[in-house]
Length: 117
Length: 112
Image (cartoon, rainbow over all chains, first blue to last red; front, side, top):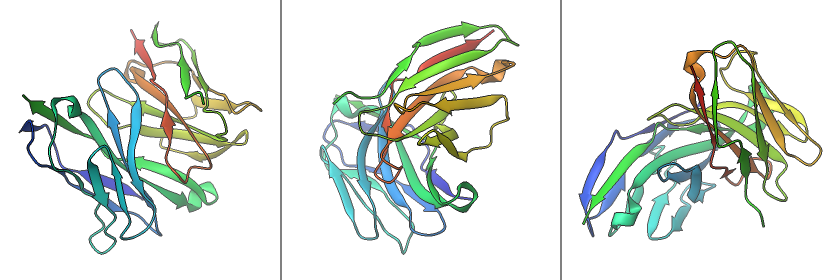
């Protein structure tokens, strides 16, 4: 079945450091890829997405490029802030034969990011 | 445009009881999916509804059931609650699941 693997956290950085959170996936067909962010006590918020190979999703200084050849969708940010401290989830959405071709989401386990002043 | 709202926000139930959680989808979204998120874990897909019919299900037993109404709001029902059912239950809506999901803030269920 489909799966998403993220690097384990927590990732601890100083403010203004460069961030990379690795994400690789396994899926049949051509999934859409997403990054979600979850702040304490809240639900998930869509951060960025990419729907086909070589697409780059970007939002709020975060970027991720859909790499079909390496089945990866790594999240990057050039300069993190304390307010970026949260849990980040990589996810895919792909058609599922067992569900009549409907798009079914699969999430990674999440990577906690802690940014110190 | 309104987002996804879930009720209640917190709930405590006794093992063996039944619970119903509710979700109002974002305006214009016709697909609702439900997730169980244990502490420190990613969301686990329970099932998804599209135009009032279940069109996808994760690895959850039949005591987890749901409904979607004509206005695309949804309910998650869990029978015979077990201690391991304690988790954050998230609802998300989308337009046919292709462009990402809008999540609610979740219902924190504690089973004692």
